[in-house]
Length: 428
Ligand SMILES: *[C@@H]1O[C@H](CO)[C@@H](O)[C@H](O)[C@H]1NC(C)=O
Ligand SMILES: *[C@@H]1O[C@H](CO)[C@@H](O)[C@H](O)[C@H]1NC(C)=O
Ligand SMILES: *[C@@H]1O[C@H](CO)[C@@H](O)[C@H](O)[C@H]1NC(C)=O
Ligand SMILES: *[C@@H]1O[C@H](CO)[C@@H](O)[C@H](O)[C@H]1NC(C)=O
Ligand SMILES: *[C@@H]1O[C@H](CO)[C@@H](O)[C@H](O)[C@H]1NC(C)=O
Image 1 (tube, helix red, strand yellow):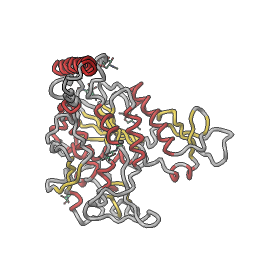
Image 2 (cartoon, rainbow, N blue to C red):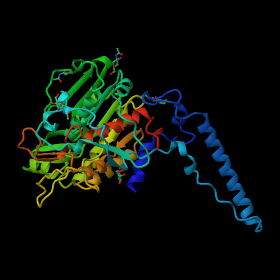
Image 3 (cartoon, rainbow, N blue to C red):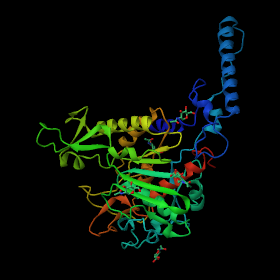
Image 4 (cartoon, protein in one colour):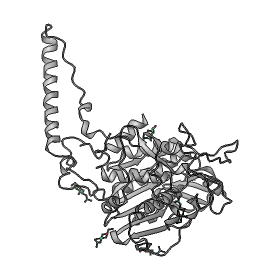
């Protein structure tokens, strides 16, 4: 059921909403920058609609007139299933697939990329086995185009790409930059605009690709909504409040971008909220009994209205990436045994209810948003976590991923979206 929802939400942009909708005819004049090839809605599509309506009308007339009137008329021929004839708008589900070994991977060397933070560079931190670097994501029903840094850079010339979220978004931002840097002639022409160092708590990082006038930015906003002081006169245990109906103040810096990639979820846990005295607030009052998943949904609704109100989706393409599965084990979920091969089945703590909330909220939005449903991709990769190969070495980590690694595959999916007209022209 959730798969169906998800597919519907991703294809919302691609399917005309009805003959009366002005959107259906506007494609030729307002072509999105990432769309290559013919405009999405041209005359064959309109002709198709008109023909479909004529066929339907004829069938209705045929059925109502003859079925009851003339008992000798043979049973009506079944009406062909209209959906199945729309081959060109059926989009491959790039998230349903498997990892296949591929000697052409990894796509870069983190030691040569100044934007891969040391904590994610497992090889530099002592990891010896290297098979975990040699896997490619293969969707079941199609093939993703091979990553080509020059092609991706050309596509992103004069663009602004913004990642928003928690440390998983920071990893994706780092991966995105390292992948693109393999196509840049002079590595010195790629720099952080303020000369900032990457750290766990930094709120803004912006990397400029000078040759391409491309900016790739990261904003740390782990909940996406505002965190503030506890209201006065509240219970003593309440030390901070998460305002579920107010989007993070820095959100005004996220607009005017070309790609906007969000994530949130990993901080929505009792230990990162209630144990630290942080409770939910909405409409000016505390919601002490509210469950985490309802709060997450309310925050996402706030985010959704913000996107609808503030983002010009004619220019900006918005993505929301789903939860990352972790692979902690043991009775207390405090052990972390990194394997040398991916697991044969999707395992790990995937909190799929977060993905369901995201898919549900996105499917009822009035503007196009693409869900990057990467949760099950990661669930196979018990071999790709940082484990003991962190920096400083004392931290054990079965949540984050090594770089190069799994986040590169998320970015390959984003690049493939840009290069194949929203996955519509993917090859089998
Ligand atoms: C995400 O994809 C997986 C695998 O294709 C599927 O089982 C799951 O239902 C999807 N989740 C959402 C929220 O669409
Ligand atoms: C990555 O680059 C570093 C520094 O140039 C080099 O020592 C190392 O062997 C390279 N690693 C791989 C896997 O190629
Ligand atoms: C550089 O890119 C920005 C968008 O990120 C754009 O507004 C600006 O016009 C571009 N500059 C040039 C010289 O093309
Ligand atoms: C960093 O750079 C951005 C854009 O150039 C600027 O707006 C901001 O004030 C700078 N400083 C910090 C601390 O982010
Ligand atoms: C986006 O394009 C649509 C369709 O052409 C147009 O009606 C709308 O005004 C545009 N929105 C913005 C914010 O430019």
